[in-house]
Image (cartoon, rainbow, N blue to C red):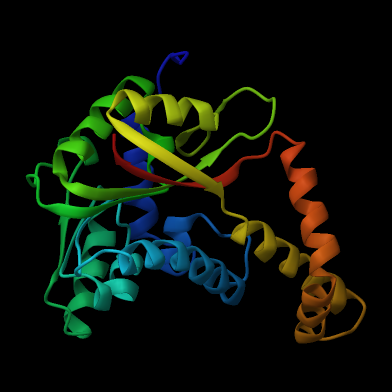
Length: 269
């Protein structure tokens, strides 16, 4: 694995603290960086992604104890609380944690706990059946990835599982480090697989196309409204054309250097 010159972790952390305090949209939409999607489509995308993690939790022999590193405003936790024995969420942004705590309290979910913390220093002991890393690894420096994953490994019970969702660069294109309001590395899937293996995990992976489908549905809606039709008509047309347009979009995206979401399931090797 080639090592980059490094990213400014503090810059990214400062961005998330600021974004959570002064959100441009609903906090979960801020955490997911789905500003370009209408709120309704964003919710549909998130529920599609939720199904993958829900399946992992349901396959556990007993309700699992969950460690959520980069929990954001606690959306995953509150949606899946009924499947977990406990849920410990950590995030760098105090406003995210305040929101998560408030949501859990209002819904009577006392088994959900949230704390402000740097993800690299969390220490909760080997107590968890499931560890969640939802969209966080892109903000971590190359040299911190393996120590982070080794720390994750130290939190797992022997039969535990890790769920990772992260944006990657597909195809033949090299990794990209974006330097804007925050810094994020869009690595190659093989780079993550190498880190996971060296940290003592075996891994399976699959692409997450929920955002792709949501973006296309948004495009259909915009086109239909431009033609004077309703958004729901556009969405029905999108569903009818899905085998062609959505399939073609997946192929085209694989031929471009655009970041795409990928999901990994890790187990102790």
